[in-house]
Amino acid sequence: MTAVIDAWEAALAAEHAAVAGYDVLGPRLDAIHMATARADQQAHRDLRDATSRALTAPGQAPVPAQPDYPLPFPVDTAATAQRFALTLESRCAGAWRYLIAVAASTGQPPSPNLRADAQAALTASAVRATRWRRLVDPAKPTVPFPGI
Image (tube, rainbow, N blue to C red):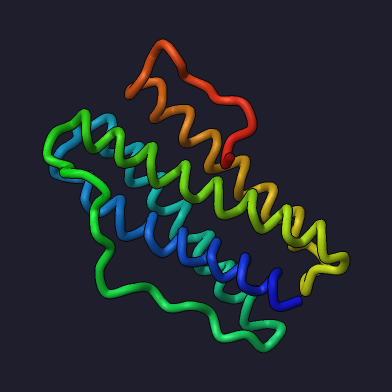
């Protein structure tokens, strides 16, 4: 069960990072893309809060947000902001996909809906990633098996 909890905590950590990461995008995006970023950030905030509550239910102490999240590259233009949004969504998709794999391999997850909830989170991040990927790389707007 510890492996499942660790993977679940990693997914929560990815959600914390996404919420913080979307704050970086604001000053670099136009109004249309800023509205998208705000909606995406709210989706991550809602998922982060729901995940924290779900982890608390079986008696776990949810991993807290970090005081700072280093940027993987400079985010100083609209193009790099869009690429960073894609990075955030891809990382979240990967974390949720990993949780699904771990929960499936260990038998009974600590929550009866864990795998379904993780699949919904993976799908939502994959859809958001596709929207950002269309801006970053219009020639390759989708990827097979998001989160890998």
